[in-house]
Structures are given as structure tokens and as C-alpha cells.
Image 1 (cartoon, rainbow, N blue to C red):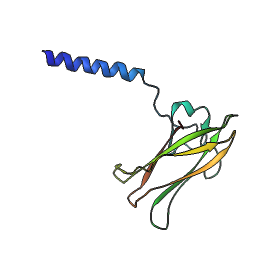
Image 2: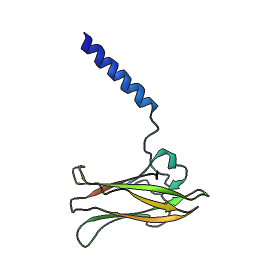
Image 3: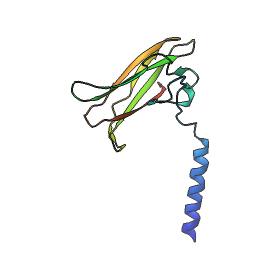
Image 4: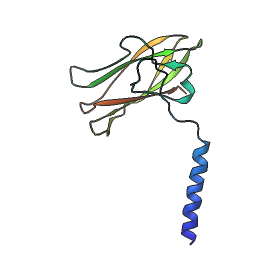
Length: 135
């Protein structure tokens, strides 16, 4: 009987703790481009967007056969700031095959910037790029 109480108490504790967390990642604001590999942390949703311009997202392969993803982000605010870019590359089965170290990018007010990430091995077929404020 004591074991059931412990499990129930643990489950309740996890439920309460998860309710206290900040909101998770969200999709960026998009106009005519519903498909994107970019995910923004919730505190950037109002200031960053994938711009509605020709070719903001391009998937290609390098001469070495490595997946390369190029995308654009637009700072919609009147202030500059730094972001952290964390790409993760996946194979055909959805298994992560490369997690390059995150990098920082500076954005000036109202700037549109093109960013590029490249998989470190030839097994990458898809990518997810998490964008968060640089700390």
C-alpha cells in the first residue's frame, strides 16, 4: 500500500512541477510558408518571424553529400538582440544523427538575416532548428 501512495505522490508532484514551467517552443509567425524546420522559444514569438519573401527556406546537399538548411529570420522589433541557434539533424527514421553545438547570432533592429546549418555526417535527411534568446 505504501508503494502505491509513493507513486501517486510522485505523479502528482510531476504534474504540479510541469504546470509551473514556462511555455514550450512555438512555431514562428509565417505568412505564406506553413512548413518550417524552425521552432522559436515562446519569448521570441512576437519579435522574430520567417519573412514572407521568395526562398526563405532552402534544403540542399553540399558537394560532400551533407544536408544543408538555409533559412531567414526577421527581427520585427526596434531593438537589437542575440539569439542562440541549436540545430538537430535526423535520419529517415527520425533518429537524431547530429547535434552540432549551438551558436549565437546578433540581430539589429528590423534586420532580416540568412542563417545556414550543415549536418556533420551524410545520414542527415531532416533538420529541426531551435531558436532561443542567447543567455
